[in-house]
Image (tube, rainbow, N blue to C red; front, side, top):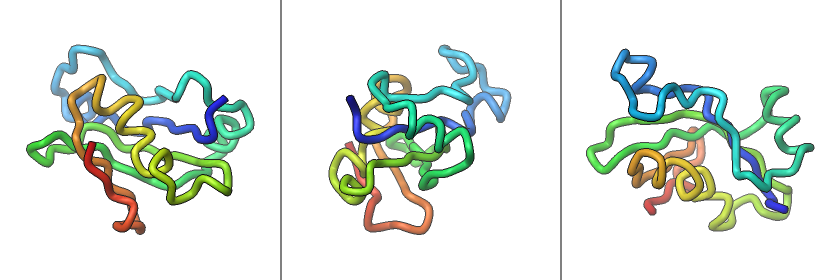
Length: 107
């Protein structure tokens, strides 16, 4: 079981009318082992805001992530959405956290 969960709130390429190969990712959640209580909290609007960028600094996805309290600030916390979805799905290389630049990470 994972100690975090994330959701994609905006697929920037789809929103701009660029035809992404995978369709509109808005509403995608993960990881597959995310606990129901954390997914429920995301559905209720909780979570820290992030944006996933490619290596040209183009924003691909924005969303929110929530973690078990003892996980905040860990590597899983900082790179989870990038490692789980942004990198393998779209080649994203950077996650930036709104209000928490110390959490920004490259992968």
